[in-house]
Image (tube, rainbow, N blue to C red; front, side, top):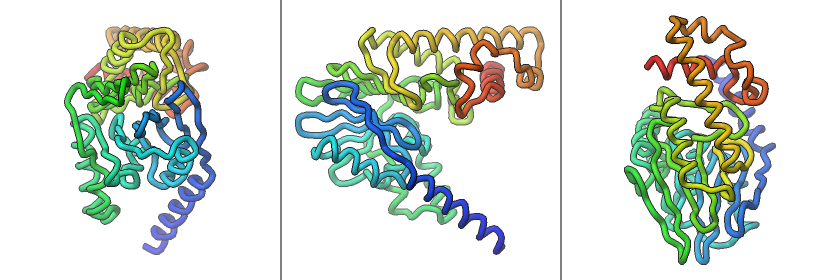
Length: 294
C-alpha cells in the first residue's frame, strides 16, 4: 500500500513539474482571432467588441497560465466557452473557467460523456461534487448553433462519429477562421476514438463538410498541430481516403487484424510524414482496420 502511495505521489509530482515547464504561445490568425498552444488541444480565441468567445481550454493545471496569456491580448470578459468534444485535454479547464460571466457550450453528447466520467470521479473521490458540476456544459445543442457579436456570426456545427460522437467545428465567418477540434490533426495521423463513437468514415466525412464551408483564404485551427489551410486539409483527406482504401482491400483479401497491424509496409508512403505523433503507424493501421470491420 505504501509503495502505491509513493508511486501516486511521484506521478502527481511529475505532472505538476511538466505543467510548470509549459509555455502558452500565441498565433495571430486574423485581426480578432488567436490560436493558443500549450499542452493539449489548441485553443481558439475570438475577441469581439465587448466580449470574448473561447474554444476549448486544455488541462486544469494550465488554466492560470492560459488566463494570464489571454490577459495580454484583451481585458474583455470570456462570455462563451465552447468545448469541441469531451476529451480532458480540451475540457479539463472547464472547472476553472466556468464562472458567472462565462457559459460553457457543447454538443449534447459532450455533456453526457462528461457526466458519466465526472460521476465516476466523484464516486472514486477524485473530484468534488461542486467541481464536477462546474465541468459540465450549461448550454448544449444537437446539430447547429449560431452566436452573434455585432456583424460577426460564429457557427458551431456537429459532425457525426468522427473523432468522437460529440465533435463540433466552430466557424468564425467574417474572420474566416475554422476551429476543427480533434477532427483534424495537422501534419500527423489522427486519433480516432472508436470507444467514444469515432470512425474513419465519419472522420473523412467531417473533413469533406469542412471543405464545403471554407475557401482558399480560410485559416484552420486544428485540434493538434500548426495552423492550416484548405489546400493542406484537402491533401490530408485524400491521404485518409487512400489509407481507408488500402486497408479495406486487405480486409477484402481476408487479412486479420494481427496481420495488418504487423505489416509495416502497408502505409509506408505516409508513415514518414504523418507517423511521428501520438498515433504511430502501427496504431493507425489498427484503428482503421477496427473501424472498418465494425
